[in-house]
Amino acid sequence: MSTLALTYPKKRSVNASISKLANKIFGNSEGVFRGFEFGQDLDEIILKEKFKVFEREKDYIGVSFTNSKMETIDILYFKNIFNKLEKIQVDIYLNSEEESNELFDFVFHQIFEKRGFPIPIKLGYCWNRLNEPKISLSKVNNKIEQGILLIFER
Image (cartoon, rainbow, N blue to C red; front, side, top):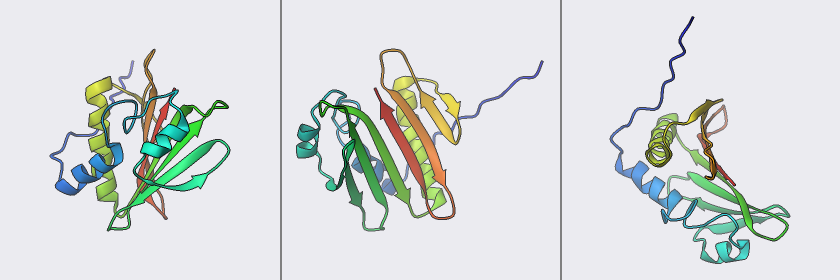
Protein backbone atom coordinates (compact mmCIF):
# COMPACT_ATOMS: atom_id res chain seq x y z
CA MET A 1 0.00 0.00 0.00
CA SER A 2 1.47 3.36 -0.97
CA THR A 3 0.97 6.58 0.92
CA LEU A 4 0.29 9.91 -0.75
CA ALA A 5 1.81 12.90 1.00
CA LEU A 6 0.11 16.24 0.49
CA THR A 7 2.09 19.41 0.78
CA TYR A 8 0.70 22.83 1.54
CA PRO A 9 2.32 26.23 1.03
CA LYS A 10 4.72 27.33 3.74
CA LYS A 11 3.64 30.11 6.01
CA ARG A 12 6.12 32.88 5.24
CA SER A 13 6.82 36.17 6.84
CA VAL A 14 4.88 38.53 4.62
CA ASN A 15 6.66 41.43 3.01
CA ALA A 16 5.00 44.84 3.13
CA SER A 17 4.10 45.01 -0.57
CA ILE A 18 2.33 41.61 -0.52
CA SER A 19 0.47 42.56 2.65
CA LYS A 20 -0.58 45.90 1.12
CA LEU A 21 -1.72 44.19 -2.09
CA ALA A 22 -3.69 41.56 -0.14
CA ASN A 23 -5.43 44.30 1.85
CA LYS A 24 -6.30 46.06 -1.42
CA ILE A 25 -7.72 42.83 -2.85
CA PHE A 26 -9.72 41.67 0.16
CA GLY A 27 -10.77 45.06 1.54
CA ASN A 28 -13.32 44.64 4.31
CA SER A 29 -12.95 41.19 5.87
CA GLU A 30 -16.70 40.90 6.50
CA GLY A 31 -18.96 38.91 4.21
CA VAL A 32 -17.88 36.39 1.61
CA PHE A 33 -15.47 38.82 -0.09
CA ARG A 34 -14.79 42.58 0.24
CA GLY A 35 -17.76 42.94 2.60
CA PHE A 36 -20.27 41.49 0.14
CA GLU A 37 -22.60 38.49 0.59
CA PHE A 38 -24.18 36.02 -1.81
CA GLY A 39 -27.75 37.05 -2.56
CA GLN A 40 -26.89 40.74 -2.25
CA ASP A 41 -28.17 43.01 -5.04
CA LEU A 42 -25.45 43.58 -7.65
CA ASP A 43 -26.36 47.26 -8.13
CA GLU A 44 -25.81 47.80 -4.40
CA ILE A 45 -22.43 46.03 -4.62
CA ILE A 46 -21.27 48.18 -7.53
CA LEU A 47 -22.27 51.37 -5.68
CA LYS A 48 -20.09 50.31 -2.72
CA GLU A 49 -17.24 48.81 -4.76
CA LYS A 50 -14.13 51.01 -4.79
CA PHE A 51 -12.60 49.51 -7.95
CA LYS A 52 -13.51 50.91 -11.38
CA VAL A 53 -16.16 49.14 -13.47
CA PHE A 54 -14.56 47.97 -16.72
CA GLU A 55 -17.13 45.54 -18.06
CA ARG A 56 -20.90 45.01 -17.93
CA GLU A 57 -22.14 41.75 -19.36
CA LYS A 58 -25.43 39.88 -19.16
CA ASP A 59 -24.08 37.46 -16.52
CA TYR A 60 -21.60 39.61 -14.60
CA ILE A 61 -20.09 43.00 -13.90
CA GLY A 62 -16.30 43.36 -13.87
CA VAL A 63 -14.32 45.83 -11.78
CA SER A 64 -10.58 46.42 -11.95
CA PHE A 65 -7.63 48.06 -10.24
CA THR A 66 -4.09 48.53 -11.55
CA ASN A 67 -1.34 49.52 -9.14
CA SER A 68 1.77 51.63 -9.78
CA LYS A 69 3.73 48.50 -10.79
CA MET A 70 1.11 47.79 -13.49
CA GLU A 71 -0.18 44.73 -11.63
CA THR A 72 -3.89 44.19 -12.14
CA ILE A 73 -6.74 42.91 -10.01
CA ASP A 74 -9.91 42.05 -11.96
CA ILE A 75 -13.02 41.02 -10.05
CA LEU A 76 -16.06 39.58 -11.80
CA TYR A 77 -19.30 39.64 -9.82
CA PHE A 78 -21.65 37.07 -11.36
CA LYS A 79 -25.39 37.50 -10.94
CA ASN A 80 -28.52 35.39 -11.22
CA ILE A 81 -31.70 36.34 -13.09
CA PHE A 82 -32.80 38.41 -10.09
CA ASN A 83 -29.59 40.51 -10.20
CA LYS A 84 -28.32 38.88 -6.98
CA LEU A 85 -24.69 37.90 -6.38
CA GLU A 86 -24.06 34.22 -7.16
CA LYS A 87 -20.31 33.90 -7.77
CA ILE A 88 -17.13 35.98 -7.51
CA GLN A 89 -14.07 35.44 -9.67
CA VAL A 90 -10.85 37.27 -8.79
CA ASP A 91 -8.01 37.36 -11.33
CA ILE A 92 -4.76 38.78 -9.97
CA TYR A 93 -1.96 39.43 -12.48
CA LEU A 94 1.49 40.09 -11.04
CA ASN A 95 4.84 40.98 -12.58
CA SER A 96 6.90 38.12 -11.19
CA GLU A 97 6.48 34.47 -10.36
CA GLU A 98 8.08 35.12 -6.96
CA GLU A 99 5.46 37.74 -6.01
CA SER A 100 2.74 35.48 -7.34
CA ASN A 101 3.96 32.59 -5.17
CA GLU A 102 4.21 34.84 -2.11
CA LEU A 103 0.67 36.15 -2.59
CA PHE A 104 -0.64 32.63 -3.27
CA ASP A 105 0.89 31.39 -0.01
CA PHE A 106 -0.48 34.40 1.90
CA VAL A 107 -4.02 33.91 0.53
CA PHE A 108 -3.83 30.15 1.15
CA HIS A 109 -3.04 30.72 4.82
CA GLN A 110 -5.73 33.40 5.20
CA ILE A 111 -8.33 30.91 3.97
CA PHE A 112 -6.75 27.95 5.80
CA GLU A 113 -6.97 29.77 9.15
CA LYS A 114 -10.73 30.25 8.67
CA ARG A 115 -11.71 27.12 6.73
CA GLY A 116 -9.21 24.39 7.62
CA PHE A 117 -7.67 21.85 5.30
CA PRO A 118 -8.49 22.07 1.58
CA ILE A 119 -8.84 19.50 -1.17
CA PRO A 120 -5.98 19.60 -3.70
CA ILE A 121 -7.04 20.51 -7.26
CA LYS A 122 -5.03 21.15 -10.41
CA LEU A 123 -2.61 24.02 -9.69
CA GLY A 124 -4.25 24.82 -6.37
CA TYR A 125 -6.71 24.03 -3.62
CA CYS A 126 -10.45 23.97 -2.99
CA TRP A 127 -12.43 24.42 0.23
CA ASN A 128 -15.90 22.93 -0.14
CA ARG A 129 -17.72 22.61 3.18
CA LEU A 130 -21.42 22.05 3.75
CA ASN A 131 -23.34 25.33 4.25
CA GLU A 132 -20.30 27.47 3.38
CA PRO A 133 -19.26 29.10 0.11
CA LYS A 134 -16.99 26.99 -2.06
CA ILE A 135 -13.57 28.63 -2.47
CA SER A 136 -11.04 27.68 -5.16
CA LEU A 137 -7.50 29.05 -5.19
CA SER A 138 -5.26 28.34 -8.20
CA LYS A 139 -1.97 29.52 -9.60
CA VAL A 140 -1.83 31.04 -13.06
CA ASN A 141 1.60 30.68 -14.61
CA ASN A 142 2.12 30.64 -18.35
CA LYS A 143 4.25 32.40 -20.97
CA ILE A 144 2.11 35.53 -20.89
CA GLU A 145 1.06 35.99 -17.28
CA GLN A 146 1.51 34.86 -13.72
CA GLY A 147 -0.83 35.35 -10.84
CA ILE A 148 -3.71 33.87 -8.93
CA LEU A 149 -7.27 32.84 -9.70
CA LEU A 150 -9.62 32.91 -6.71
CA ILE A 151 -13.27 31.84 -7.03
CA PHE A 152 -16.06 32.05 -4.46
CA GLU A 153 -19.25 30.12 -5.29
CA ARG A 154 -22.54 29.73 -3.51
